[in-house]
Amino acid sequence: MPVEIRRSARRTRSVSAYREGDRTVVLIPARMSEAEERRWVGVMLEKLAAKERDKERRATRGDAELAERAARLSDRWLDGRARPDSVRWVTNQNSRWGSCTPAEGSIRLSHRLQRMPEYVVDYVLLHELAHLLVPGHGPGFWRLLEAYPRTERARGYLEGVDAATRLPDPPDDGPTA
Image (cartoon, rainbow, N blue to C red; front, top):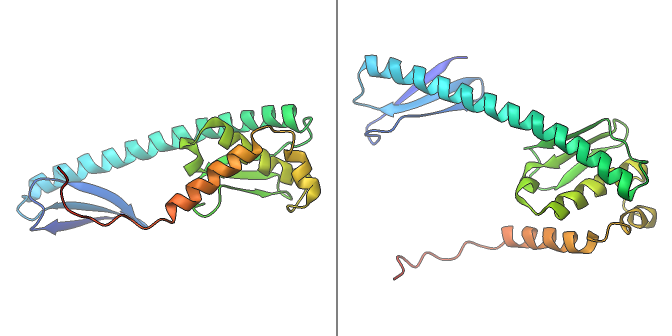
């Protein structure tokens, strides 16, 4: 992967790096020598690689746990009838909590749910499992979710989160005492 070095006169001590498309960008102070640059590029490439390996390990472990959770929820609330072929966390869903492709038997949950209460994650997962049995949001679909006792509470929680994210940022009135 190509590496692009960006020197900055405003950057005095810190070095940082990130992936940008098909290359790695390393930000360094303008005053840094070529030898320091080479050393720091190596350090930052290793840090990025370690971070990516760790993220991959967490995602793989998390997806396996999520699939087990889906099986337990299906057994308990849907008489074991919903059996997805894949269940995984994704980072590209910012306007949905989850999605399901019944033809493929795949379920995807937004990574944003990982910080939410367990009953909320269970509800979203059950919601997507129910779509494996009933497409759309008709009466038959909602009858499946009636069995889960925290459906309304979880829906309210998610509505509150959605509403809070649409609130404007408070004005910056300067330092407070």
